[in-house]
Length: 76
Image (tube, rainbow, N blue to C red):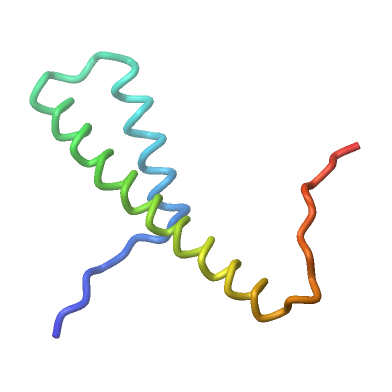
């Protein structure tokens, strides 16, 4: 049984930011820009999945400890 190699969230996000910067500059040949865009889509999905899983874990922890109620953060 083979497991897919997953990239840590922070590394995925950093690579995605780098790809976006390269694409925004507009200096890439079309073929390379398309490959970068495709990679960006993959990285975006990885990040969304990681965030969704983290949100589910937080929700489970909250549900296990019903006595703790989260309130919106107020930075005043």
